Length: 115
Length: 110
Image 1 (spheres, one colour):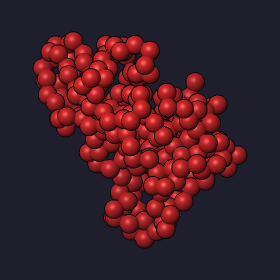
Image 2 (cartoon, one colour):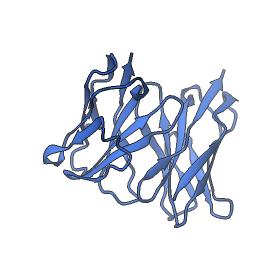
Image 3 (tube, chains in turn yellow, green):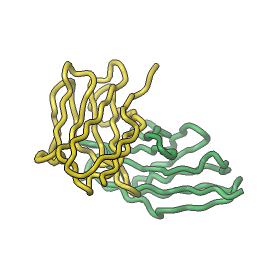
Image 4 (spheres, chains in turn green, red):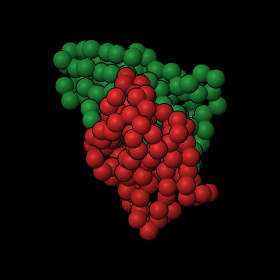
């Protein structure tokens, strides 16, 4: 069974440029998460989807970040315009359900460098 | 609010020695607790999880963790370290959402 797929793996852009990340979750997983992981820290939730509905986006900087999950399967996270402080690893994860006991499965992440 | 604190950002052990990575949690309800491992340039991989079925939880790669409610701890251990265990380890607590600790980097010396 394929795991969570993310692309690209690495992205280098100049500040003020737009960037987009793509995620395809494990088949059958209804819940999808986007996390940001800064260097030397644990992942921090940006947004959680239940099927196609964003049910928790309280930590998403909405002035520059946007996300969508059309048809409740794969998802795209966008930053426009990017700032130097956005340099981080962006992780996508999925789980069978949003229940607390369900583990999340992580993709390899996209390492973003903003210059 | 739920949170976890990992004591020690960096732990170094010799190959064959005991591995002990510390995690303390804060939760107003019975918690679900997880340990994840992250190898360089990879995502997080689940090592084990506690969901109240048993206080001693065995995971992959010879790791185990013990839930101690009185100490609000969920420390990760492995009797004998292997070079391949060198990685970043994250403790997490799940409630409304999953909260991760800052991570502990494990170094294994030959």
